[in-house]
Length: 303
Image (cartoon, rainbow, N blue to C red):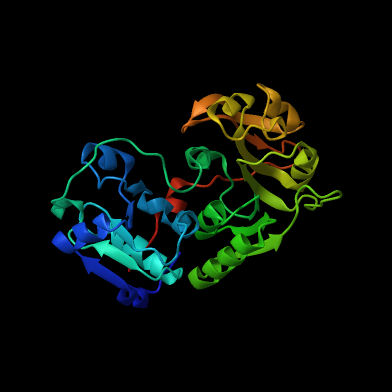
């Protein structure tokens, strides 16, 4: 993904007391260092963690596009990419910590934090994903996965029934020149059709509608991969969701995905929720010739 350096002019660089005052006023702080740096070196209290190589998902995970937003890294190098991306995506009040955390003199916290971006299950399994092709992002919301995968070179179709979220995603994809096609769709309507053999990768996270599983399987191209993760029934003990229609029974997810080949799976307490997670592949016909490499997501040029 190439960004336009002209958007640097829409980013305000601040340090010292000015930065501390912005944080004190309630600005969102987005820290784009690694999780190890975030915890070991300390971070601004309340900061959200989104490593720079996953920054393409940032426009989808920050609620208010007019809220003051302070981007920081260790030495104000990586933050340049993310702040430019957010400005180009249409955020109106983007600030960058001019000296980075190396120059921050305010208080620091040293706790761990979850990623404020794509599902870790997707990121942790990039070695099982195709290197290119067509992606279907199911129940995409504002498109945290659609934007990331489009930035990695995929042609993405993002479906959801939330017209407002899709409109925002469409605008951001256009501004970032990403190949994302949005489609308003009620996935729970009778007769929903995702097509046959259309997609090399399908991503579904935190969504469950059991009748749609045959459509998901049918929509995979030969050798295509499906990344799926959603809540287990034991999540109800934590307060949300509680409707059993939206919660999996133990061991249920692999059975819903037959006849796909299960490549990796897990169940239990991960990333603060009780979930079941699977990466599966259409095992008939050809297999994917190559896999997505981490470098396809990581290699995000700043200049």
